[in-house]
Amino acid sequence: MDLLVATRNPGKLRELNQLLSGLPIRAISLAEAGICEDIPETGRTFVENATLKARGYAALSGLTTLADDSGLEVDALGGAPGVQSARWAGPHASDMDRILLLLERLQGVPPQQRGAQFRCVVAIATPSLEVCTTEGIVRGQIIDQPRGSHGFGYDPVFFIPECGLTMAELEPEEKNRISHRARALQAARPILARLAAEVREDECLA
Image (tube, rainbow, N blue to C red; front, side, top):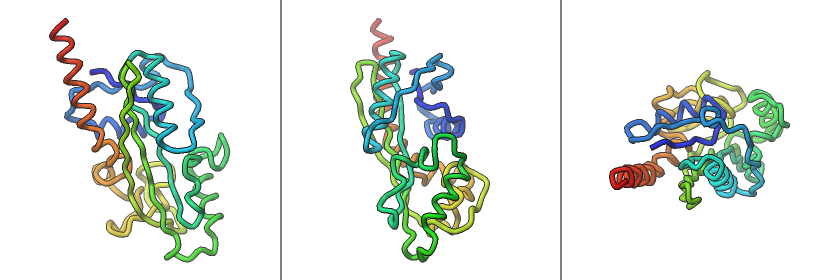
């Protein structure tokens, strides 16, 4: 089954391909599908944004589409940056710009009050625009200095106590086992397997 992945982020596409290994699915990017349109993320929650993107790109492509919305929720900031995680420091900000803004907002906050979580919602839309969603969360805390060279986004300052490492210090295989996106996609695997089986059955009957 061809699965359109609603992203232009090569890092995210790489992670997703690893996480979906073993399924009878060929993941293709928006660029590979020739889609230039952007679906605005106007939702107020991760579920709303992921659903908007999955339905929008499924309608444009006629393909089963997987979209996700994810971000960092910091306890001391009332859950911010949340759905604004990628846009928090402005539309053209780099990952380091966003990290520096986060650390600036947390100046003076003691370590024990720096709890945070990464949340990811995955939405899968069929060509008939039916949608299923799954969610994954990983808890941690924000540290003062970036550490590690893997991952992207806020990974270098997101410390996971049970691992003793930041998300960016984890090897890709380990990150793909415990990350918020990994957990959401793991929950989505049975849905994708069912959809792929339905496509195979339809092809056999055709």
